[in-house]
Length: 106
Ligand SMILES: [Zn+2]
Image (cartoon, rainbow, N blue to C red; front, side, top):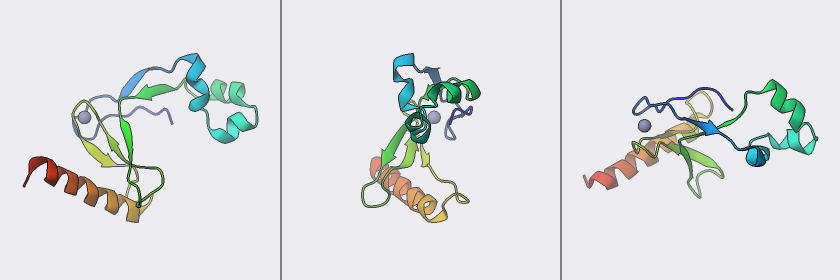
C-alpha cells in the first residue's frame, strides 16, 4: 500500500506527505481495523503517506477504481496490470485512449 511510486507519464514522485493521525483509520485495511489490530498493523507497516494521484471509477465497467490520474501532469494509467486482471487492464486502456481522443479533438 505504501510502496514508493512514480507517475508512469512524467516520472515525478507520487509520494505526498504523511497522513495525519486522525485520518489513519481510512488507510488501515478494513479487516485489520475490524479486528482491533490497528496499532499492531502500524508497527509492521510503513507510516502511510497520501499519494498525488486520484482514482477514477467508471460506472458500468468496474465497481471501484479503474484508472489512476496524476493531477499535476494529467497522465492516466490503468489500475490493474495485464497480469493482475487482463480484461480490466485492456478496458481501461481503451477508455483512456477514448478520453485522450476527445480532449485533443482528433
Ligand atoms: Zn505525471
